[in-house]
Amino acid sequence: MASPPLTDALAEGRARTLALVEPLSDADVETQHTELMSPLVWDLAHIAAYEELWLVHRHGGEPLSRPELAAMYDAFETPRAVRGDLPLLDREQALAYLEDVRGRVPDGQSFIHELVLRHEHQHGETMLQAIELARLSPAPAVPRAPRPAAPGGHTGLETVLVPGGPCTIGAADDGFAYDNERPRHREPVPAFRIGRTPITNATFLTFVEGGGYERRPWWSDEAWAWKEQYDITHPEGWARGPAGDWRRWTLDRWAPIDPDEPVVHVSWFEADALARAHGARLPTEAEWEKAATWDQESGSGRPYPWGDEAPEPRHANLDHGLLGPAPAGAYPAGAAPCGALGMLGDVWEWTASDFGGYDGFVAHPYREYSEVFFGRGYKALRGGSWATRARVATPTFRNWDLPERRQIFAGIRLAWDA
Ligand SMILES: [Fe+2]
Image (cartoon, rainbow, N blue to C red; front, side, top):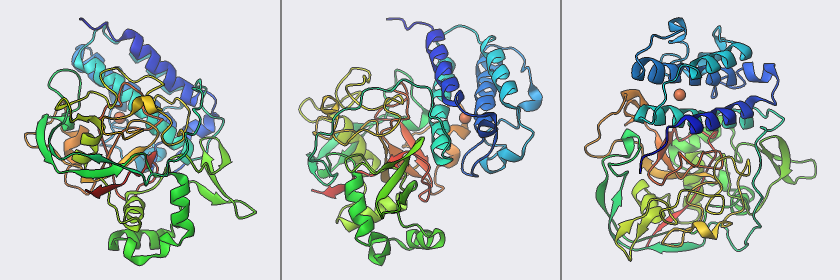
């Protein structure tokens, strides 16, 4: 079956991008609030510059309309930390640039169209990180899905068994995938146990209040040094209220910590320490992907944990659905063959693995997408979050960041040797 041109999908993606910034003041959109994140207005013009470079110029053969902007909006030539010091387009100019480029995009459904669409989707998640980290409000004008009831009984410490034996890892040759998801290959993965759900706030709070941040044996040397240097005593966004009660910044407001939601905004260092506290470890990427996709009975991998269907709201909390995490275990229809819940959506899950290329990796369409990050201490994350668009969130999709970073909507799923 032929796919339709991506015109509608591109328009929908653009409407969402604009909705993220629409309620914010010009100052909030144009200011760099932290060195970790770009000014939102940089993301806007960068989305336009990327679309112009790849779709209008390289794919369509047309000249760049604003060649003088290319370096400023190139993610590699202009690192995040300095973006706030540049003579960036202001909000109005950035929005006009987006509109102008979109008007010159050739119709089609090529790999480059899909690449550009997903790039905009991925920047939406980055922008939501910036909005939450800088505590900007009001929240984006995005329709919220109904919040599912907490099923109860999930702490993140309940486990399911993933049987041993070879499985298939990575994206198939057909369809869109990023270079770092290929080639698809067989990998032996011995039996192991994995958390049925991500670790909840209740479980993490026990770690915090039980002195987990002070127990030296639970922290690697590097993690301990980081924690001491920055005086880290709880996840990013947590604070104690006047009565000693814990609360959390949730996109646009303080709220009591929900014990049933997965913990979010923890670093890899904190995830590793929490695992040690429970005699557990983080899953490797291969273990994670096997738990999410491998159907032992049929001896094959599923495109999604629940089967072949594209994600719908009943499967997972993706696509900005709740503008925050749902209670752990709230989507039984999205269960993986092994019984694990919430493998996609809610929170990214840190893995034990360093980010690198699979055997036979070939950079495509440019080295800077992923190859330049290989072997540089980045840890891989899997599964997407509530802020990941459904189109982007597949079980083979690989995200990565440094082990001290906490701006990602990242949580923890534990693993144990069987
Ligand atoms: Fe980008």
